[in-house]
Image (cartoon, rainbow, N blue to C red; front, top):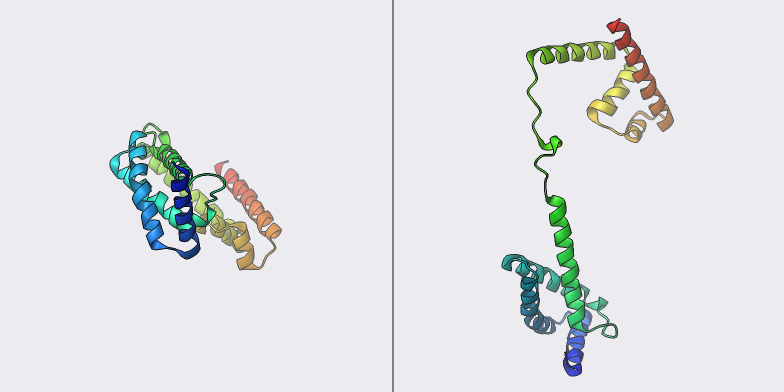
Amino acid sequence: METEERQRFAELAKAVADHRDQQAFADIFDYFAPRLKSWLLRRKMSSSEAEELVQDVMTVVWHKAALYDPARSSLSTWIFRIARNRQIDLARRANTRRLDESDPTLLPLPEESPDDLVSNDERDQRVRMALNELPEEQRNLLRSAFFIGQSHSQIAEETGLPLGTVKSRIRLAFTKLRRILEDDRD
């Protein structure tokens, strides 16, 4: 890029940064958008992805023109660096979105046998009965933590108990619950 042209684009960027000059931005857009799209197409992006990325990059140019420093690089270098970084970000996001179809956590659970269903119902009934044997305060703490899903801090705030007390009483409730269930089994 010639020095004269480089200076002109630096001035256009300054006009965008300082005055939100729409004509200056239009000149920058008209010059760089087709070049960016062509460059992205050569980098194996689809036409629609490239157009979307160009729009994204030019939006960054509009909003962050004040960050451009003509002493460090040409406007062209700055814009293409933004495009490169955005393209890398897109590729990273695309890689993290891919699902492994063989991942066991994504597969449906096998159907339970009738014996398992009966066994599970019996277990659930034993746990409910054991919960009913706990003091009301402990039962309420367990209900808040594990059925409602509140954090210990939320429970402490709601009950007015110190956080350490909430934690120790939940631990105590589990110990009693375990003892009740073990006695039940024997």
